[in-house]
Length: 220
Ligand code: GRF
Image (cartoon, rainbow, N blue to C red; front, side, top):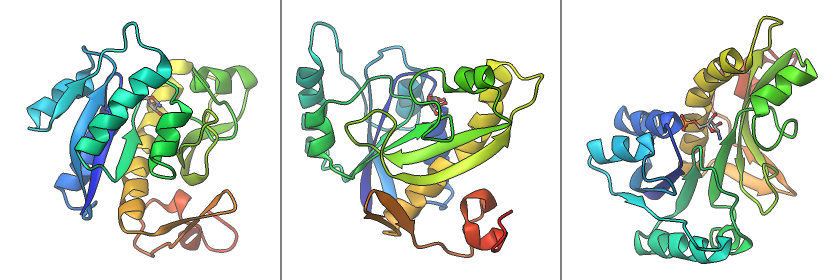
């Protein structure tokens, strides 16, 4: 059983999706042992507490990036964490943090990376006029939103969309692909090779956009 930590800063809906996937047995080989936030008021912390999980606020005030991250890493080590899941965690990780959990940190980003990195990815997509956007779960490296890609989902972008409506459409798919990525991770079905992730796909992986086998050779 892999020991998972979730880091979040706000709403925590991706955290909830992963938690539900663990509860209903979709993710069988992992359990969340701690939830950490840089924001005392984060809804996700409350959800964690309500579910009987250890939920810890670490105050960033007056600390530089690395000092803060050393504090977080210490907690993660104390909890003997195997994998760290960033879920709406609004801080850039220091090299110290990334190297302490090399290839063991995941993030979800609301765009088809490598397009639209950084903040307001959905707004960037609308401003650029792309016809499709989506979400990406990837391993975290020292470069922002840049690590090896695990799974992606695709959604259409309509002329009538604004940032909110597109965000809502993308979020629904985030709640499917993050649990899928964690399932693949905890079943040891991901291998990083030259900056790419090779997935040991299973016919049962139910989110067809992410599974080329279901779509057949011509895709979906
Ligand atoms: C999501 O859109 C995620 O892709 C981005 O931040 C948002 C977090 O939402 N990194 P939530 O806190 O999981 O509801």
